[in-house]
Length: 83
Image (cartoon, rainbow, N blue to C red):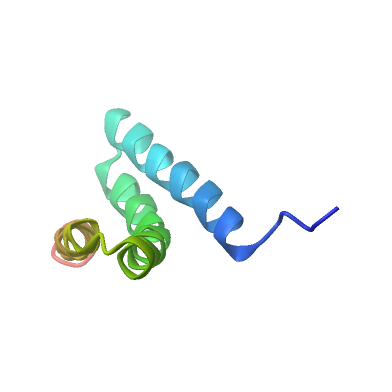
């Protein structure tokens, strides 16, 4: 049986976990921690959407992920460094 624990599999799991955790923390009125979790998720989102761009020519998802990452970085700077 082929080993199914590839980087892509780990990335997909982490993508869901960190994004969900970020939304949960934001809903629990902990937006600073939610942003950090979502920023960690963006690493996996960028990897995933870059792959989809290269394999299926879905450049829109990749561009949207880059824009979202910039917005989340601005939020992290706002909550953690400009208080």
